[in-house]
Length: 94
Image (cartoon, rainbow, N blue to C red; front, side, top):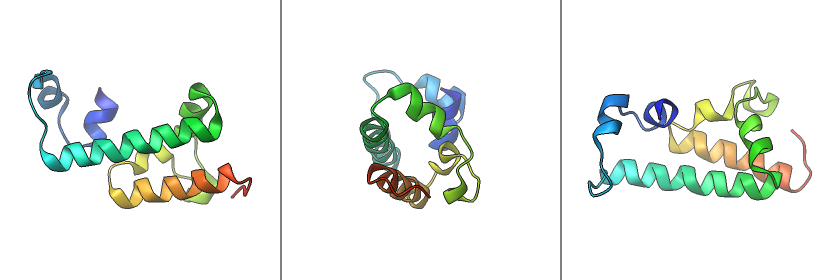
């Protein structure tokens, strides 16, 4: 929950207050949809959920030695991670 709260710019406390029947703001919902799509793509590329999660928390040279998980707070960062995943999908290791 802390990781998600950091990514979508909500405090842990605010996120914990959301119940199943409470609707998130549109911008937060759109951001979460982009993240879910990225994770779906990552699971397909790695063909293993655990390996993808390890990759997300590793420093990647193609991302200037940043961890992909740290780039998910903006659409631009999500796009950059998706590009690297696309390269990996086609065997272009960066």
